[in-house]
Image (cartoon, rainbow, N blue to C red; front, side):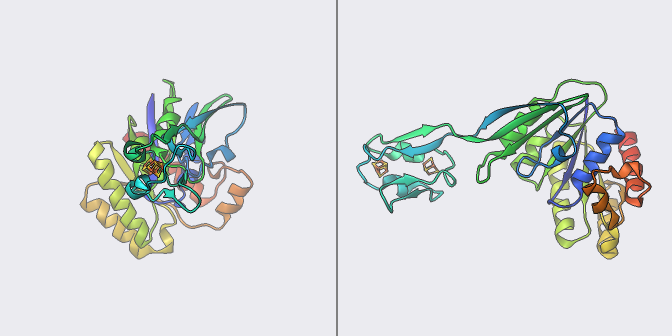
Amino acid sequence: MKQLLILSGKGGTGKTTIASSFIRLAKSKQFADCDVEAPNLHLMYKKGSKDSKPYYGLKKAFIDQDVCVECGLCKDHCRFNAITDDDGYKVNPFKCEGCGVCGYVCPANAIDFQQSTDGSIDLYQDNYRFSTGSLKMGSGNSGLLVSEVKKQLQDSEGLTIIDGPPGIGCPVIASMSGVDFILVVTEPSMSGFSDMKRMIETIRKTKTPLAVCINKYDINKDISNNIKDYLYENNINFIGELPFDKEVNNLINQSISLVDTDNPVGVEIKNIYKQVIDLM
Ligand code: SF4
Ligand code: SF4
């Protein structure tokens, strides 16, 4: 099984549009959406059976009010400000990181740690296998959930395509494990350029081969040229640029794949796909 991961340093750069187009072009039998904080590949691929299981993150602290002697040590030692004392000592589950310090310092043994459901791990099966997951709002540990989503992938013929999480944090690192190639999608803005550079630095540490394409390159051609200069100077594959086209959103809203049309963005996605396959 060969795995292609598609990443962008930030959200909204067209990463999922490219991933879904590649899935179609590759006639991929297996793919995954690792953007667990805002998954949306399932909007296009949700046929067939769906299996869901709960995702348990780290255990959270709970204070037994009947046992608590109100010494305040837990609140003083919680570095995440997760404990309040307005109406007895209580833990805010959205702030608790499950570090365990409060339980360690409590003299009354009043703090227990309980498993909480932080999201779901989902698998759609039709004539393809589609692994995805979704994190509950306010829950942490998305990197662990990304690893669970990837564990559902099996050895299979052909190309497995993974729509990665945005950013460069823990979930992105988790999504990189074991992949054969990474395509970075960037956009010509100051933040897009800066995020792309940080992303490339992170990928280079893993020694995974990579290439970069620019989405909506024509909204700021100066920055696009700066991005291309940077890639050339750093010996990184630049494999294409997609124009801005108002028609794209209309097509996507009608669930029409860009690569099934003669839209210039779809045509360029096909070119980029061919180059990725050649580089892999
Ligand atoms: S487990 Fe850690 S983060 Fe959670 S309430 Fe206790 S000290 Fe705070
Ligand atoms: S450390 Fe224990 S006893 Fe003290 S306030 Fe916190 S829960 Fe209550």
